Amino acid sequence: MRQFRLSLVLILSLVGLMLLGGCGTRSADEGSLLPDISLHFANLISGQEYQLPFTLLVRATGASRADLEVHELLSGEKIEASMVNVGVGLFAYTLGGPGVYQLRAVVKDEATEKILAATDIYTVWLLPPEVEFLSPAEGATLKGFALVKVRAVDNAGVASVKLYIDGEFHAESKIGSEGVYSFGVDTTLLPEGAHVFEAVAEDSSGNLGSDAVEVSVQNK
Image (tube, rainbow, N blue to C red; front, side, top):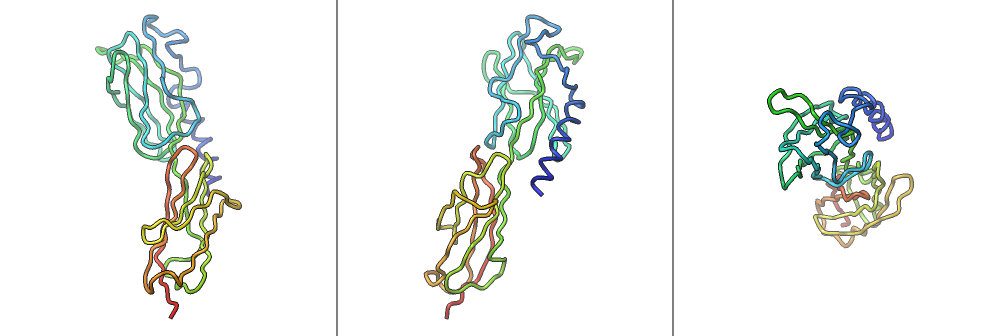
């Protein structure tokens, strides 16, 4: 499923490039309509994944305002927002939700809204790991030694998976086999009754994904 979604994103990326203006979009650095306007992202590398929430920074010399055009590829949502002036010639906008974003910053004529300068189009990945319990299943009854298996995948790579029992840290695994991470739990050390197992995966960018199941321990 993850591979299919990534393939779909690549296809949508090409479509998004056309919708945002195409690969030939001209940046101010390459020659804008107003030579005295310099416009570029200060903290972006196209195609790289970043940690949520992520604040975009744009330097716009010679402009008092900068706008952001955003196309979220997975949902198809498009927005245009004014960036916040956080310093002389420096503008910011925070992406708070997960997704794959194609975006560019633009400077417009305040009277006509005509675009005077635009950056190149960037693709930004803000995706947490996908996490799923393989065993035990929701509502399972456990006794003795239980083997816990968790599937965790991420486009940027999974750095670690941690297992929590009733909110308390139990174990960590940094090595999986084909995306599956295993943990051992001695249920004789747990009180009888219901317990919540939660797996939290962290990717190489610091984004977190989780899944949880409720189980019952019966050793008597």
